[in-house]
Image 1: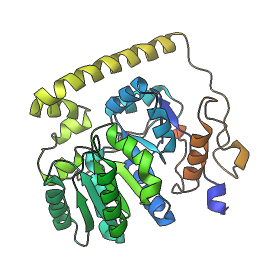
Image 2 (image 1 turned 60 degrees about the vertical axis):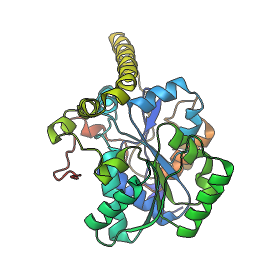
Image 3 (image 1 turned 120 degrees about the horizontal axis):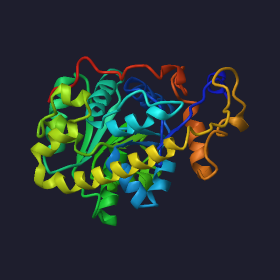
Length: 325
């Protein structure tokens, strides 16, 4: 094991049943690059409050999360809920921004991208817009399957298409949790270094849906803008999400009213990290498979990414030049 991996550790921040990597937006992109350079098949999850609710309702998603390389928080309430933790989440890592950042990364480092999912024609338009915006970007494959009803024959065709294109990054545009379940079931078979389900982000890239004004994005109100654009489709979902968030917030408040939680000492964050102690901070209920993947991710993270209680008062990072669609 390299000295770099000996000197790195990362502590998951457990929020509402999900183990989040405490990474900033820039650190997430850098970690994706590290995973690509390693070359082994992986996928990661951008989890919002809707996904947190789905995980609570569907216990099988815990295994999906355990198979993922890491999870990042794509929801302001999740970042706010981490405020009482010793290690906080630096900021929201929005999938609607990641699709642009990953395209920029791919153009700069000659990584190949493959888009799968979305309505017919959306992936093509997104590819056209992104290749125009990021010269040198290679979009080597497009497909529009339905991940909810993908037959074995259709999967074989899609796998053959992906295998022939040999992308470094596979972007799915599927509804939650169908995209995450599909990646968890097939990422090893597909052999793509990094896969992620970014859902409607491909519509943003294609210019089919407008992003919220910047002040709404900063204030955690992007959901309200989306609701105004698509009230019939999103009202029921957001009502369920609101009920879930209220329940979790009340639960957290009740816990805090009984006094601060006692934190067990964890492995020091500097110096050599013994192998056997890397996952000592994880709850006993965490599957062994997740512990292995979490330790593996720790060896790949850019230098300096680890639990950072000294950043408690660090303001949320705001990208100065958000992608325009």
